[in-house]
Length: 190
Image (cartoon, rainbow, N blue to C red):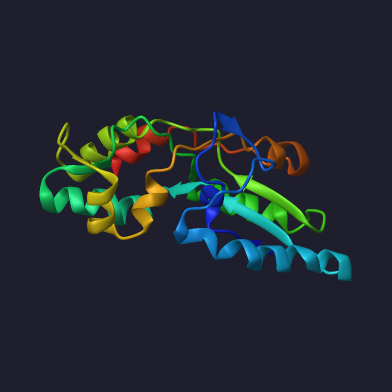
């Protein structure tokens, strides 16, 4: 089994998409495409490669959201927001993605799954929730992409993507049923 750098390898999506969308990764994840192509090619030799691409993982007070948004918000007194906040994030709870990994162990060789819960909130709503978690409700630090890259590094390009995913393939083929579907409420709790 292989994990991509998540659905970020798809770049910006045009509305809600699935695993068949064209790939257009930001520079942070571009290197992974050739690697995954080699991994998936092993299906032809009788091996059982499966690729799971998580959305932006949240939950249990950890992950990238905590490191790049909540903690800096606590320190600075305002949570960063890249751009105008109209871009969407494809989210998945850590417990739900863990369940998908277990189910993917029995997936057909060469399968690719977007591990997303179908929650695709706009960043403006996410940053409001993260402001609550950081103890600075309503305090948002609007950053241009250039400012965000200076502050966060190249991962800012991925955070700025506008992505919406369905996750229907994993539900249909593996019976995966994400149950943690209150992302904004949980993000607000930290």
